[in-house]
Amino acid sequence: MSIIVQKFGGTSVANSEKIRNAAKRAVAKYKQGHKVVVVASARGKQTDELVADAYELNPDPPKREMDQLLSTGEQQTVSLMAIAIQNMGYKALSFTGHQIQMITDSVHSKARIESIGSEIIHEKLDDGYIVIAAGFQGIDEKGNVTTLGRGGSDTSAVAIAAALKAKQCEIYTDVDGIYTTDPRKYSKAVKINQVSYDEMLELASLGAGVMHGRAIEFGKKYGVEIQVRSSTLDIEGTLITEEVPQMEGILVSGATVQSDLAKITIIGIPHSPGNAAKVFSALAGTKISVNDIIQTELDDNSANLSFTISKNDLADALKTIKAIKNEIQYRDLFIREDIAEVSAVGIGMRTHYGVADRMFKALAENKINIDSITTSEIRISCLVDKQQSDKALEVICDTFQLDKEPEERDM
Ligand code: ADP
Ligand code: ASP
Ligand code: MG
Image 1 (cartoon, helix red, strand yellow):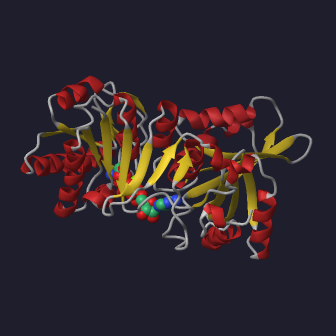
Image 2 (image 1 turned 120 degrees about the vertical axis):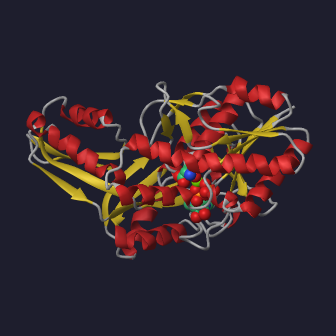
Image 3 (image 1 turned 180 degrees about the horizontal axis):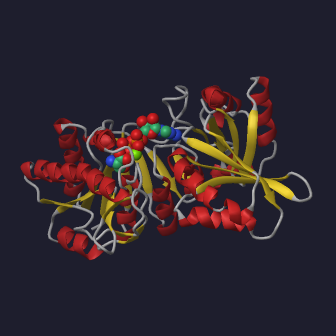
């Protein structure tokens, strides 16, 4: 008997009718002879509402208490789901992160999973139960409730699928798959049938909010087949899987825009070995993850060091960097919050040239100024003014014909 993990996002469990529909999907799989684990998110916008409640009481709410509070959203959904399934005549049990021993580190609001009590889940599946686990939450070794970061239920689901060696992890959501870009931002986007872990990892970390980036890391590491699909339509979704040869033929698979970024430039860092290491180890010590890093020579004695971070981390990052000013003797700091990053991603870039050239030319023709550029083997990203970011995304999508099926695009 194979195990299937089904994850339902917030909009897919927003009210009783939707919970019942999700429950029906779980039961349908169970009736086909699978063991079924459901991972559920908080209903609708509940997590946002809880965040707002906390900020009404305290402009700087303690992170431990935020995790304790936010985890209650998922806890409600799982019991409601179990109640719905039992009413359909099937055995179901709901579990919190604590109850399935979803052990994480202690970094509140962005904890990382360390282990899962898979034997607890196996035991209940063997007894014929549909197991419903709360997404997004875990527990640290001291027993504090932790959360995995916004959108983290995807990661809970894929990690559980990996731990149980599930046949597939289905991500049910409000779109019917992964599109060439966010269809809310570019209505001509087309659905992708299959995408490689590496491409999806880039897309997710560059702002494609349809999947939590860490979920893809688990998927790739443990070879979990992931399918992103609609919770309302009965059609095949997008498979996130190992690379297959025809993927190389597609030049650009998708595009993203990320606007919740800030860029810090440390101006005039003296050229002496170890200064960059001091900056980034101080940031790592504050658990801030840094995206793109660019260092440019100013003169023989000094350099400018720029990097982007999530806007949520800006206050902590500034505090950290100011604290080491005496140690590294930089001249000044320059902050930009009015920027966004647009990116084109595709494993085809490894074997084709001219992608950067086409992208920069198209942006220039549309009078979009590029602040800075970063690349990897399979992506090109540009920082642009925030007001121009929607236009920049559209230009990139049009240039690489992301409104067409891959076989209809001219290379
Ligand atoms: P859930 O609550 O089910 O986790 P999310 O809101 O986190 O749902 O993710 C689904 C949303 O992701 C879609 O409504 C869509 O607007 C957005 N999205 C961003 N990029 C993409 C993309 N490339 N393909 C599909 N959806 C995308
Ligand atoms: N409920 C959490 C959030 O809104 C986790 C999730 O939905 O994946 O971010
Ligand atoms: Mg999500």
